Amino acid sequence: MEIVNHIFETEILKLGSYTLKVSQVFSILIIIVTTKTALWLIRHALFRKYKFKNIDKGTTYAIFQIIKYVLWVMAIALGFEALGIKVTLLLAGSAALLVGIGLGLQQTFNDVISGIILLSERSIKIGDVLEIDSDVVKIESIGLRTSKAINRDDISIIIPNSLITTSKVINWSHQSHQARFKIDVGVAYGSDVDKVIKILEESAFEHPEIHDIKLVEARLLNFGNSSLDFQLLFFSSSIFRIGKVKSDIRRIINKKFNEHQITIPFPQMDLHFRSNENDK
Image (cartoon, rainbow, N blue to C red; front, side, top):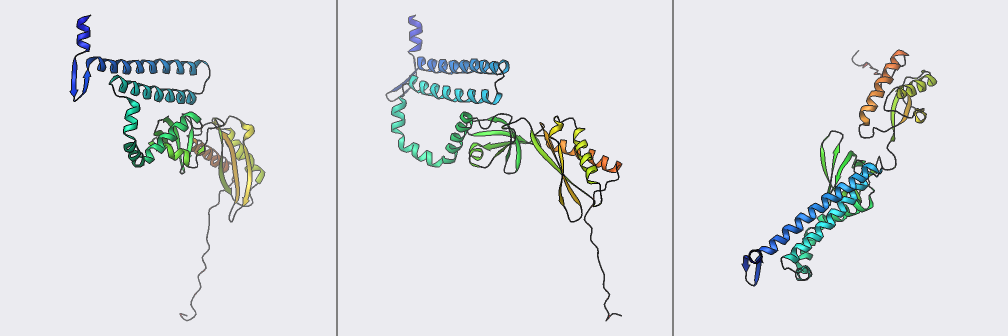
């Protein structure tokens, strides 16, 4: 026992009046291992509860992130105490320095506060499809300072959290797992309007991603300069990959138009040439 006490009391580093002992380093290791173990147990407990009790994955992730940050802040504070450094005295003595750092890292702190708001408010969750600055992205993770997302080209995008909280953001999947989309198409004047509407609705019915056919609607939108303008409205759960769904439906529409001799007009221009009488 005396040997163990002697080892723990062995000095590793000495700077002036401050002495770092083996026992202090051992305490730091214990704090780190305990914190990581606690986080591992909490993570498994939360995500097991998410799987078996039908809890939203985004909510589970947000709760775990908040717990993780709180535990690490407590661990750092305990680590300073284990090293013999009083946290309160450290903060009081470095108040002026912290003010200077705060001014220099104002945007970073803004992002951090925004991250805390996102994690606690849960208005944005993992898997949500957002439209930010005309770019549609899918949220993969929400960190304390930045969030990670991918766009429709499968390119990873790092988004500062302040951009999400201070900008106008459209959350396509906030209230429902499906959203309404539209396809615009024009047909030549003289076409049978009722037949065009029927073809448009049938084209949407044939796509496997369109589940509720009662919500499919085609309407005559406008009398254009060179065409009758129609709009096809439908709901789909394939929010993030809606581009492929629209492409498939357009292909079906084009095939059915060809079968029923319905033409899609294109702008035309008539040119009139006038001869010069002097040349004659």
